[in-house]
Length: 181
Image 1 (cartoon, helix red, strand yellow):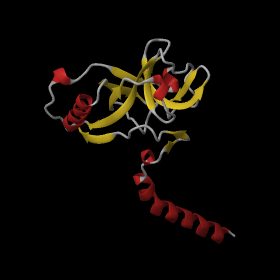
Image 2: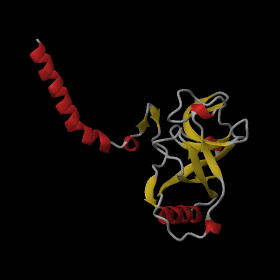
Image 3: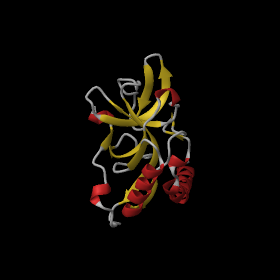
Image 4: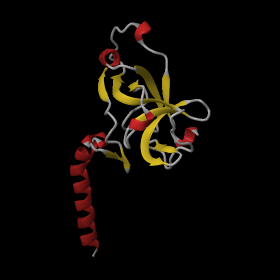
């Protein structure tokens, strides 16, 4: 019996060792569902050298009417949007919102929050951060909607380029985690 247990344990350890490299390469953001939340209508962040990330974000703003840039902070939208992700938003028409889009809205404290639209309710859209256990306490309504994310660029730090500081906006969208509430 002891010998069978050791063989079983050895088999599990070998299997874990063989599959560890595969799981390390698994990219959760390739799926339309992340941690049980539909995110299929949200753009995936492209990881680029910092200067290139800013250049592509600025080019997208220039090509998109009503677009602007915010930089995300916080942990609640990881792995889709790590802290520091450059978000390109466009003014959104509330009636055009769809489940799975990432939006930025102003909460009761007037902070800009970027989370995913989960469900349409009578009093507005329920939103949730990917790392949060519950929906946000207030819904997204026409009056607090800031914009819809149409592009996301995650700059590789340490790969600094020459981007004019004047072209970098100072706005921030906060990815609120439960710990931050």
